[in-house]
Image (cartoon, rainbow, N blue to C red):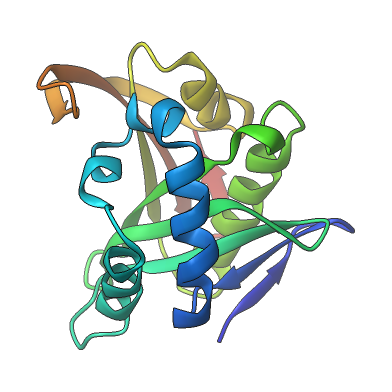
Length: 181
């Protein structure tokens, strides 16, 4: 199991089945705010859905690594690498944060730490982040962490309300031990 120290109060811990209870409780408690940008919320109806999600991450062939964000020893949200492509040394970062931890720089710090992990430990060359154009709080994260806005993916995601949204596509590239924005 991988654990990444972000700073003195925040660390990332690779998710375990034992985290499913708190994961579901947070999603259920904050369903209204999370649902706006995260389509999976409507499909997370019970703790078994969270348990199934965690189990899927450990199945052979999974291309995801997901971490619980712990802030002051409390569950704060999730962050992970998805679409991991070892052949082409690339992946995408996805994240969400509980309402009570927003606006404190937790996610910005977590993304920086995960970028370091992906470049150094997983030997990735390209990392991307996609954010709904209207989701300003989310798109501030790649901007603050040195990602380059490549463009807009039109109708890139279908939200829970049945509407497609355009996605901003950000990337960070490492070439020969240097970061290219």
